[in-house]
Length: 278
Image: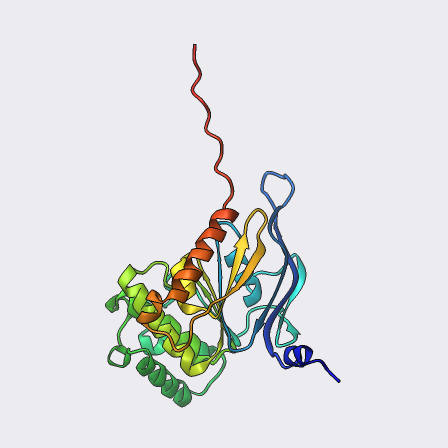
């Protein structure tokens, strides 16, 4: 008979499984390679919203790009639903921090872009674009160009274009980092509404502790020099979430825990030289 704990584990479906991943970068001056990531093991359950957080230079964006197939690992492997990731694929959608909308295309054509690359018929592309433009609140702007849109609206185009491809996994690299505080919080709520409807697996890189706690089921905390996983924290907030979640006791407790952990993991400041005396 299989123990209850083992049976529960066997029923977990993994969307992504990172096994022993290292990443080196060659230095131009000929010195030994820089180790950006060291022996990363990370399994991500299907349908979960996982945030990755850590200080600058800890390798969180590099890890995300490896999972997307945009950067190869130096050692180790990433499995997507049990199959090795060999390169980019529409089943793993990627949202960058900077606007990735094409300025020469309308909202409609931007949303259709990935579908067109995949050879989806024009009629289906058009219907899908209209559905997603309506879903993200851009139905009245579907024939507008990006220069006519605000930063938040352009980010909605990014989200619509990724969702239109119906990926299994969404990989998001600080997508709201360039937005003002008010727009950023609004986009967080809208992203959660999309996620509640689709329950797609999301990996979300951020340096913002509050953002990670508000959005995620689980937070992966990374240390640096070299980049490695220091801790995984389960977020004790019920779903669905709204603005009231930001002032809950569970939110504040998790926020304090994360801030304390990040302070412990921060590299020491370089020593300051004492002024010389005659």
